[in-house]
Length: 156
View 1 (tube, rainbow, N blue to C red):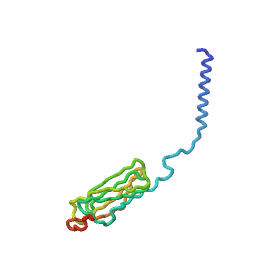
View 2: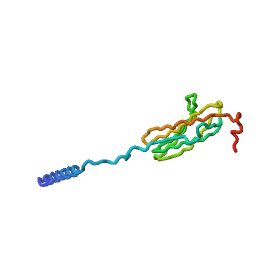
View 3: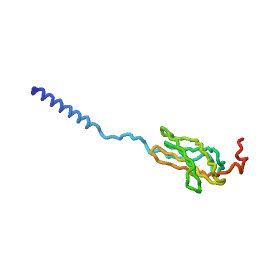
View 4: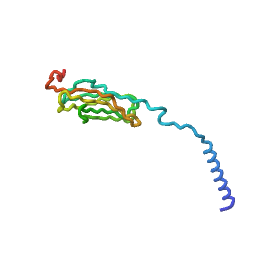
């Protein structure tokens, strides 16, 4: 390779290095945008239905409505006996993208083998975008038997 060509290649490489160094040197530090512009909105969850102290017939379908607000990614409910720590029902609904406010209706079967007068606890749960779980205040309902109170079970 001729000497002039080697000198030309070296000077070309040095000029690229110098320009690259100048461009990199011009990049001053600055604030970068983040996913959240502030703290995530507070999440709240509550059971809308059934109402507190309602009575529900054994061996029937009941409607549970859970309302949640904030940055909600999932909503669920669970129902358990008050006296025993066993969960009788649970269901969860997830959303593709977080929602600001939602009201979800669930259908739950009240077991037929429960004794009349048994108290059930129903709670709603909401998960926000960061994975935090929020649990509602409990709603207590009481089970009754349609054989003992047939007029309460009549469909109008």
